[in-house]
Length: 129
Image (cartoon, rainbow, N blue to C red; front, side, top):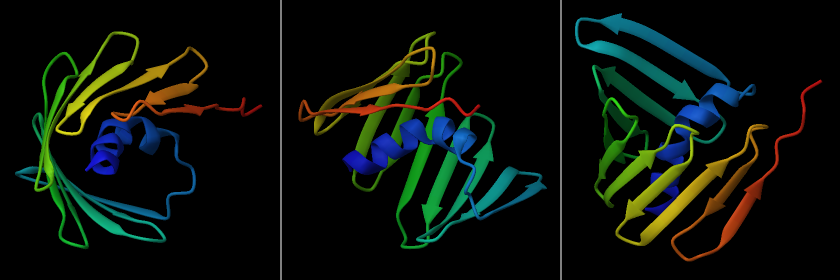
């Protein structure tokens, strides 16, 4: 559950920064946009419609994400629910059944992730020049 919630919360940041993504297919239809993402280990189908996102992985796990105008997200999965609130600086406060977590980002894109267990992870982004 922890990995799923953090993955969904950071998906928009991580997908926009990823350069080694193998394949992305997009199709538009009357019900929004459908994206299929393939990488070395898994396949996920993502349906985007209005302010709702539905994700289904090839192993049958599903998640529904609703995003409001302020960037806050309500995430519902078979493993539990979560709420992600984002401030104007891109910092996130995450509430799950396991406890609270947070993701803070500085101006250089470096992140500090604090999990519900109190452990901290620092992600340092090197300058791409």
